[in-house]
Amino acid sequence: MIEIFDIGILKGRSFSREYGAEESKIIFNQTAIEAMGLKNPVGTKVSLENTDFEIVGVTEDFHFASLHEEIKPLFFILRPEWTKSVMVKIQAGQEKSRLPIFRFL
Image 1 (tube, rainbow, N blue to C red):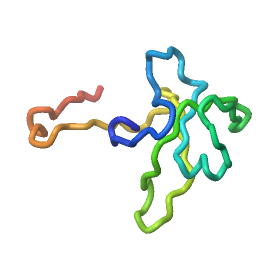
Image 2: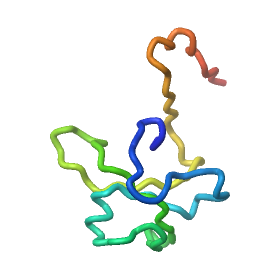
Image 3: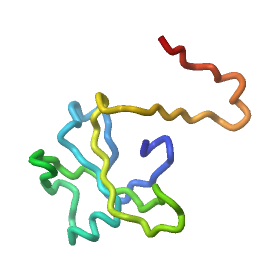
Image 4: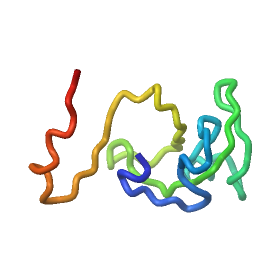
């Protein structure tokens, strides 16, 4: 999602297969980091619902709800088995040549 929507990374990095298993890593938005009062968040360990994570990145803030709402804290974790949606980025003008790209079984 971070790459598809071109969300900027302010500190650290995004998820990557280059680092092996990423299920214990977490990325927060800037508002979340400010709410937690972290000065140097990358490498910090946090616990969410009895699961420990290591912060590997901080994204810029972006609207993920109504544009009329203020930006709230947000985090990203990598759990492919929880995926319910698929996002595809198609270059403008290439829509007809790229669809249908999925075949549902």
